[in-house]
Image (cartoon, rainbow, N blue to C red):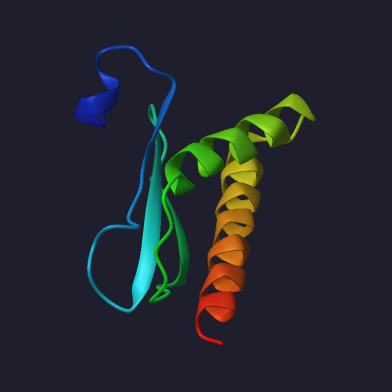
Length: 92
């Protein structure tokens, strides 16, 4: 059993955006299921509000009847693309 989920939440997403390394890996924990990792290249760019952006993107996908796993994957890709665009704009 995943200890952080013992208190009652259905799922927990651990963000890896502020970790170090060449990859940014988020981990989705769900009760009695194997963790799922969502991995993208780490970008040099930084931007405030990405955690809120990710949560909102996940919620929007869930509201459109997507699975939690798909919602997290699509949300992470949405934030990655926004960061990539931000990095490109700031490198000009």
